Image (cartoon, rainbow, N blue to C red; front, side, top):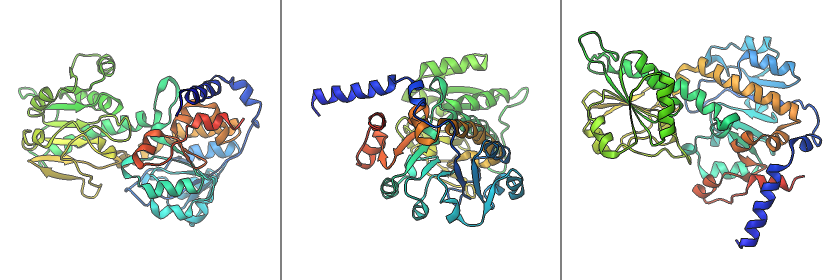
Length: 407
């Protein structure tokens, strides 16, 4: 690409970003009703539902129509009758749900669902890049789908609300799991927090983001000795400030990490995946040097895992032992506490749909809202995330350039 063409494209993008929102608002209707479909999930052992009955009632009162497949909320202990009482339409037909203009899911689109999708449909769901295959992505592109991924949507202050909320749940629950697998039924029969006269367990956390911060708070609250490793110094400082106490923190230096892994009773792996794949920072030789009976909770397994020894497990058989170390590697850990996770998702999604309706529809809100644009990886069939395009060797189209030509 010539320097002149590149300069022109950058100018167009800049002009789009600087266009006053007031001017854009004049082009859109005041309110638009949405037809939202919520199917019952059948893959990834998904137990969450994206909207609770209370949120459904709120959105219906705002003029939206919501169609829910029977049984969609049962795994989170929301009865079908609650959705009926909230005003939702109910159906036994998954095909009917997939005819909705906006499809709302808590699991990624799977190949078996592709034939149910409609042309020009909008999908809001997790993406989970490691589970995505090229043929599925190409099928979505061919159907001219507009798709947004939970994990990429931003709110104010460069905040990722879905990742933060699910991370907090996963971090808290990972410490509960660690305590379980340290016990006699699975491990050496060790109490996570220790007692008077007996030193507490050593909990090592890799990653100081939402998951790591929640895990550190829970572990220190139980009395464990906590260490946190992360290459982001700001996050480490923020973590210490939020905890209100000094704990051991370090950058991820392989030699120092290896030494402390050998002393740890519990390791929580929770590194952020910057471009879809989590950095693998713990080699098999490091795992071989850990204590027998130590517990690894690899929360990052959704995006490939931080441990070389990690492999995907499931809720039915959640653990395996490698080099004497117990590994818990269940993707979508928040489905283990699906009711709490459903409330968390619903609290984020309901305002998003309110704003979409007020903006005049999904396309208008994508234009207005930079956070929703950041979450959009397909726009009318165009692949708008460059790192995804590179991974699957598909054509990339800059979303801001597309929007700048649609005035």
